[in-house]
Image (cartoon, rainbow, N blue to C red; front, side, top):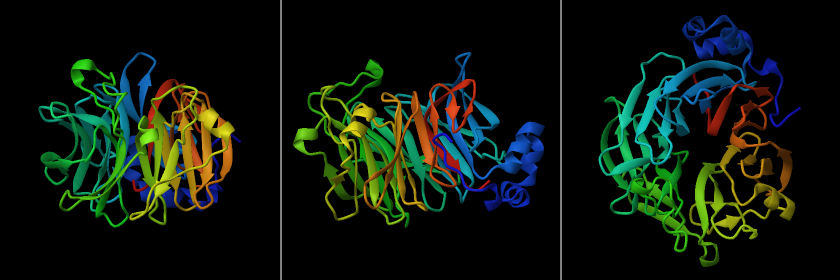
Length: 367
């Protein structure tokens, strides 16, 4: 068995799953894809690059069977999904300027939105609890400040406002269970599209984690990295079943340093770094590219493309319960049990496809 851990297929039978997925979607699929869908326990979406250099999004099962592909104009990065509106979004990789909104079951046509003048996307975002609004992390590059763009899901995702992320370089973002708070990972790295992806302030970074009120845009809490860890860029976040916020980092300091790379906190608490064994920290190579929480199993998953490693941690104890070698490890997402992980070299779970998966996976729960 590889990194993916599975439960029995009897959890969701063929008829139950097809009812959930919608028989109309299965009818539109190629016979092999429809068969794969009928046997699936979970469906995911991830961006990819094909061997001919083109880009797209694929929906696929936990086994790595590709169901459908949607072409993209340029490379995408992070994704989000609303089970209420049955919409998924792929955000352009920084400093990209597009986001593609689509229905995984093809029940609604795709919509492309473009960032407004003076802004670009940072590759991540999330929906409001009711699916009516989309929040996107953005860069006000002339003002050197992070922003959260707000888009109206009831009006073709027209941009209707923004509020600050209370930091520089906002990257990933997630929503609290009650829908009232955004958790924003401000990476602290200054960039400008005139300089591509060049990091302009590595000697005076300002990484932080901000909790922002979704109704008012007001700052609830802000947690800056300690002074001795100012080069620890806060990049990705997720929330566990108890509401505890987990974050993962990428270190921009000396290569032979061994800083903590992940941690957690609850509202009203100080951040607490995860104390991983030294061999695990070394294996992560100062770079956690993705984090995911399996809320049912109480697990936290980390991947490192630089270290070629996938790690599973017990959320209660902080102990490593699994560590796997996975060359070019990319995305990670909760599976029916444990996690499914992907790689830049085409691995998804136990399957291999002729694509380079991008760094993130979203689980599509309602189809």
